[in-house]
Amino acid sequence: MNQEQLWQDLSALPPAARQQALDFIAFLRGRYAKSATAAKQTRSNLREEPFIGIWRDNEAMTDSSAWVRHTRQREWE
Image (cartoon, rainbow, N blue to C red; front, side, top):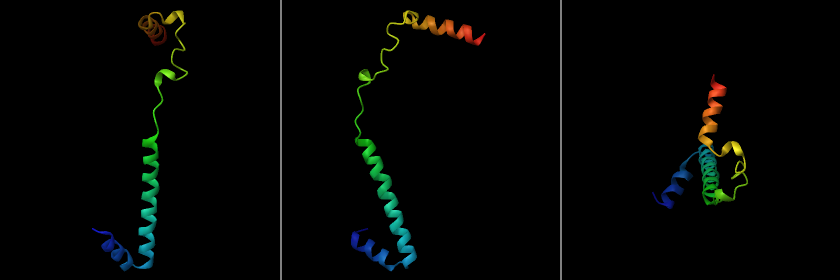
């Protein structure tokens, strides 16, 4: 379908239907403009996030598997 045919089809509609079609086009433009903007956002480097390494100096975390095992035993019994 080319633009001329689309314009003719739109013009042939009654005014209320034409307005609905234009509203729908505006909705689609807004919806896809947001998703295009979201896709352009760059991901931050995870290693630079402030929460990385917050437990680095925690002595209980020297063996994280043992800590999880102990916590599960304590909490689930």
